[in-house]
Length: 626
Image 1: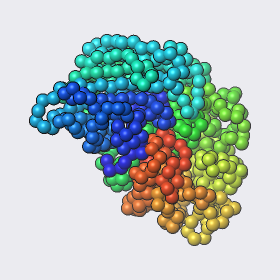
Image 2: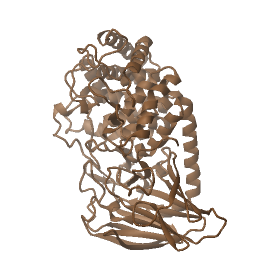
Image 3: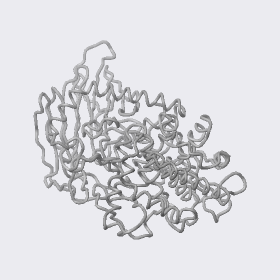
Image 4: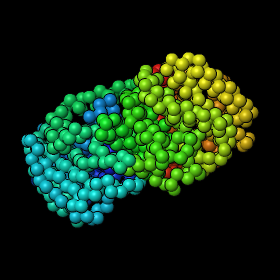
């Protein structure tokens, strides 16, 4: 990979079990959680009696790093020195079409040693993991450790003494319940101290490859309307020790499956949008998957709960799911249904007082209804979320070729279309998904959302066999689109941010579904003129979101680039995004909100919305054509 990741994923199981390296070299900085809080993992090798570090800081001399690469599920480093080459491969095998693997809380570190001088060397590896991995803040509670044997694996586990399961929720938090596990064959595991903290340390001789399993059993994963739910992997009462043993045994097969997926993704994405586009998809995949939690209800229904990372910590957020769905429509549309179930349950409850769709269903990991400012109207996104729910439902039904899930929720969908008909042509002063920019009346992009929401109901009606009702919705959407093109026009080929702001501009990302569906709602010449206008507004690191500021959003940038008819035009529009990640001094998991003049982070990191980068690949697949 030529792209220099701003931060390298090492472990990406879920929003809590998440470890990153925010540096070019694995020895340049200590590892951290995606929030940037310390999550100390130290790695060293002793070669012929002399110790060297390969991960994290410390007093030991560092082996020289000679390479770094990121694939879809693995990050690999190579080092050289003392007559050996060391390869450290971190793999979290989150295959999105395999729910057991996707939810399995086991990550791997494989250390491979080869001599480079023709001599035989005695090599011992050590990995130390500190208490920060099982506490919100180091030192907040006593940590207990236990040494175990799991089959033929030496292992240790570590967790807080208090075990406050699902006791708190919020954004900038880490887990403080459950147990971290460290295991390997032919190893010795000890509990001790590392820099004043409790730690587990695993040591083993390395003759070829040493495979280390790192796992986390959170016991219960989600508070779902008062019920504490397990993750998918232990829905039947599976024990973490058995899961670790199974994961260890199937490493070779799992790694081969991950490599095949990664290679296919890279080839397809390169064909769709070029190598730089493909590299961004490889880097973003684990981030997107690892910012969700897959759980199961007592009735056996799948839940796929997103966390709004470094935003406000909301859980099951509709306008976060909306940009993320291209990835899931490609690889497992059933996960989208898992995103929507909490919204429908909340919308049907007595706690939701409105005739429009909710923005979210809780604050991670608590999914019990909105947690901010009650449910005050000024904090809601009425047109935004109604349109989002309708588009998501239509896209998922098309991807699956099955409309049954949407049919179960048709009363809500029809109600929300009613809201769009009454309020979508010229929205009042309200928030859209870009809520960081504040409330805005007469938002042209919100009207596009309403138009595509109405069109989406038309698609669903047609799939339900109600052809006349479907064509009526699509005709209505076309009439609204023609009216929009007149009222939003600047007169120079571009279209406004708001109907009452001549000369303004904004990315018109919501209309991309018209192209993917092939519904022909908007006149092609309108879209072509709007895309052509973007070139006049580009900055060194991308197209600004709108004329109010020089920041942009990565997901929307790729969506409007997908509106371009020519592959080279798409590549030209997204190359500055690749460059922003490559050069940014903000060493955080891929931010989706950054400054287009400096490439520095404006806000947000590790968010699921990077699933939106997959939209060009989704278009290329042809899965969305109706």
